Length: 420
Image 1 (tube, rainbow, N blue to C red):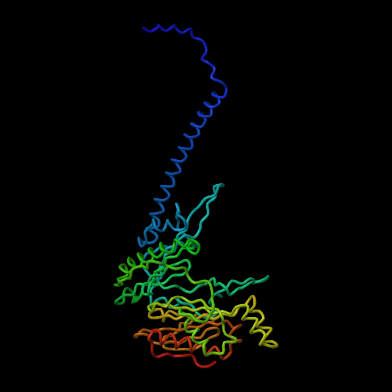
Image 2 (cartoon, one colour; image 1 turned 120 degrees about the vertical axis):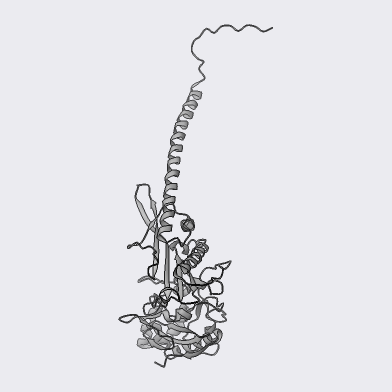
């Protein structure tokens, strides 16, 4: 039924061709390479896992368990290795206030070198201990980036130092370009007489990685809750808002505003506005914020207009405003415990502003009032180059700002600085 198979006579295997042999060789080499790569990948995954485990433990230890280490490592696109940062590495121990933990991320390059980059800082401060929490006066950084030489362009179109935005209605705290601050207000004075615990979570990447801001907000709120328990500060923190809009960096027309610069828009309707700022950047005013700010500045067109009204040495001094010394004015109001944490800088030593007083020193005017039985401090900073242009208009500006703020917040006992 079937033909029997002929016995094999042996001999060489059939030649399947050089191309087929080359393919087999490549497959062999690929297998060896894949095995080596797979082994390296397994080792790298193991080393990365070990680094992440060690980093989680470090974060927990350095920040005293106040933050979720996975959330911290998720910042700036994710970090595998986190180490203590800063020139003088600091960790939180709850012994004293202020207290903080500073962390850096460790990254290597193709040459095997390792570099440290700032990654995360958690800081704890207490009021009334932090007498210099808010600095005002000559020590303030200019809000606009200017070059020492070369063309300046439209310098006052955008600020590099925007005012702080309220978290929700402001009761929880506020935030800036790269940090979120949560304030735990104690129902009764806690350890060392602390009446408010101020907790700030910061990451330098947040200015560019906007998705990091909600992470910082969660970290700050969680840390504030746990720190309040540790310090014996009985408090109730509101929830986080659903959205955290970016801080306001662009300046727009000064008129018709309803934000924290609304007082200035109202003042322009009746004032001699010829030499007054024509640009503004304000923040929402929900009514419970511990801090409110308004930035005013002159546009290049406004500068040219005012320069045309000046003569002689006054015009020569003011000409620098088109580049290196732009004209600007900034107000900031502080309420409650923060009102007593305002410090005047510019002299030999920082001087605290005493609630219930008013005055002026160099670039700063300040006043005070009482809001629902709590103190409030009002400040206005104007650099000398613009102060000389404003002249007596400056007192009118401060009065308009202070009066409007007092009326809007329901405050009484307004104290204004005397005439210069």
